[in-house]
Length: 72
Image (cartoon, rainbow, N blue to C red; front, side):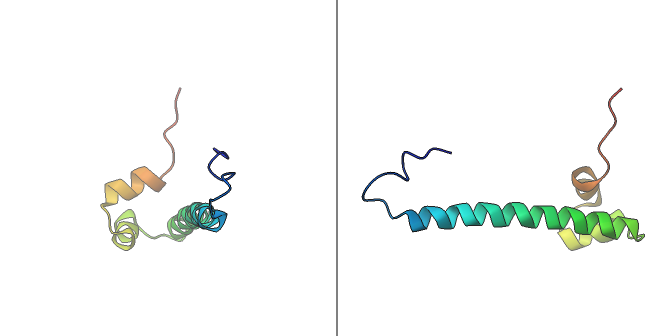
């Protein structure tokens, strides 16, 4: 992180802290979403059902949240 901008005497760091909090919240929500998708799959929900909840295609949901491809 570039701390030079935070150190400026006339900068109101509360706005920067708000950005940092948003970044942390977004990361936490992505982890929660991935966990929710994994849980749904473990309980028998199809990729089509999950994709409908995500607002995406089945293929896109599976590519993003499916098992990573094994590399030899």
